[in-house]
Image (cartoon, rainbow, N blue to C red; front, side, top):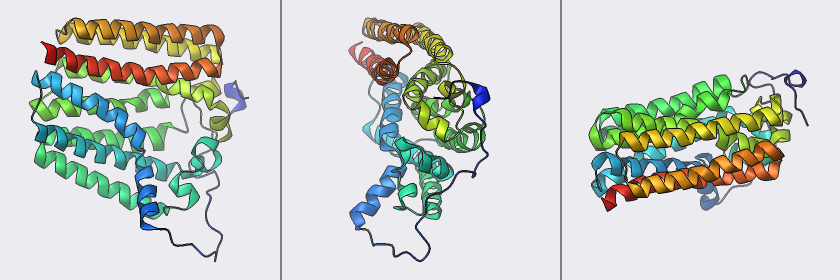
Length: 318
């Protein structure tokens, strides 16, 4: 395993081999369902699900109750397309990395299920449709926020930071925090302290969530010369960073609760789920094992879902 920054020299974009069909090789036609499945995989549906989990509860809080079903569906549709386009763009730029990592070696561009050029056109098309739909069905602010997040994810995180800095996911995590702003803007047409604190909560949550997973796939990232924190820093340092960000995330959830005047349902859920997150992070600091890191990773998903669902339930109960 690589545990020291001196042992890693990051290669520039495009320096890794790209897996491609041999010249002159016959390409077997794919059934329509398989092709559709490959394009769907480009959007990383599981990541989109998590992003949308933060959008609807934010809309409930912004509206002080259930927003109109039409508005919710329009926001989810546009948000899903925008996130999907960003993810497809990410796969297009990272196809050389994906080819040498075990975790990503079955992605559609690597396997040849989708040609790189087609993936790029697909990503751009999704962003165009997403922007238009959010502008027409919601408002210009929500459309601009969604597009800005997609561009930030593709060009700042993927193209600029991913291969160059161990802080890649810290800065790049801002893109994943924008759906909360989109949801708030869709309802109110403006922003304020409450949505900005939700943005900060997701922003602070992202490093412990992703670094915990990176500990499990440390060798994969090292093989691809990607300077993720567990690759270029010791497990002790990475675990301490995860702990610090976990505490900051829980503190931010409390700040939001105060600013948004949340009730007991939110406070109880945020406190209990946050205590588990911090407790698991503390255990990771003590053990520094991939098994505990994966427990932090899985609970971080549960934590974020619980906090956002709780804020919606709290509003509806009151």
